[in-house]
Image (cartoon, rainbow, N blue to C red; front, top):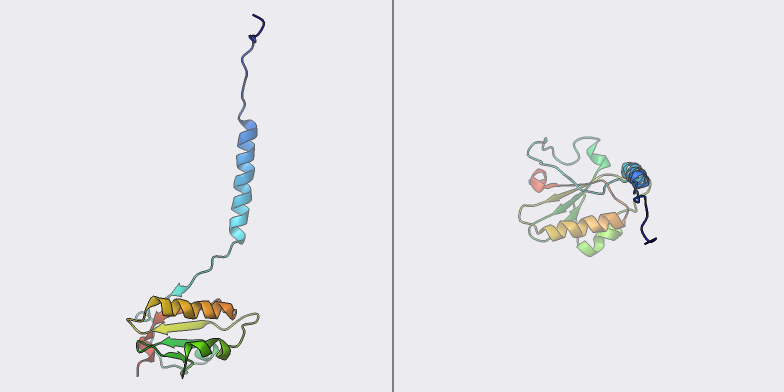
Amino acid sequence: MGGRRKHPIKITFVPLVDCFIILLIFFMLQSTFVIPHGVELSNSKKEENKPVGTTTEESTLIFVELHKDGTYWLDGEQLAFKDLPNRLPRARGTAKPVVIASDPGVPLQRAVDVIDTLNDRGYTKISLREAQQFKS
């Protein structure tokens, strides 16, 4: 009968709580350094619709237009999608912001393909909007 212990075993959770606190602090610190990658969506109806090239601020932007007829335009010049990467300069340091203006009814996949091409060239500041401002 010597197999029974006289004192019950005590399990303490203090080391487990310490581990959770350390992990919590680690993940909180790590999350502040993560920069989310996303696309800024704006509603052009709420913004002023000025013609392209009327202000000096607009000259610092790159405009990519996606039209319903399947054409692509880069800063007012029509081109094929396969030529888009060759016409975009590789972004270095602080790249120009890019505005992708799409006609209503253009498949979303076309915009995603353009965004992928822009990301490959180093552009990260990308806005997507409706192409109302480009209508003549």
